Image (cartoon, rainbow, N blue to C red):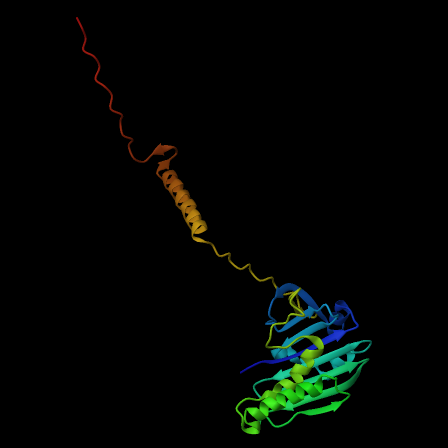
Length: 241
């Protein structure tokens, strides 16, 4: 089915302030790849990124992004690969500056762009449109135009949903949850993988313990259940008269 997610990156506000506006809190769990429904991450460039997948996408609507951009700037991106829809927008001080969208459900046709577009837009558009034409234009089975909004957002923030995220990998992605819900229970620890030597050592310890329990069970009140074997002794010397 493909990816279905939204993300927003905010600059000019602290992580705690952003999470407070969204009524979110960190769970303490981290992951290298953003797979949880809600995750956050910081970059060295000063962006704080929030990625929402599935039903959590509703959290990052236009009114919420407008609020997050007040007193700072924000870049937002949404993808719905099952209908080949992509969108990117830029915000500052609560105002949307630009918007780029692509709706490719009926085929790779065109991209709509409005506002004061970033300088990188023209080069990204021309590159991907050239690839689209080389692949067969609107009749091609691949949709390169889908990546125009996505690559534009990536050029500004350093994040793309289907690539490694070097700008955000230093600290990893922290799972987030709503402050209106009870804290989630911690996940059980992942069992440690043992090598052959460790497995053999544990097996030997279990066998030793079972043997000890077996010998305990063969006694009742300290009395052995089986009759102990008598030691053979030498016959007494004959009496000398």
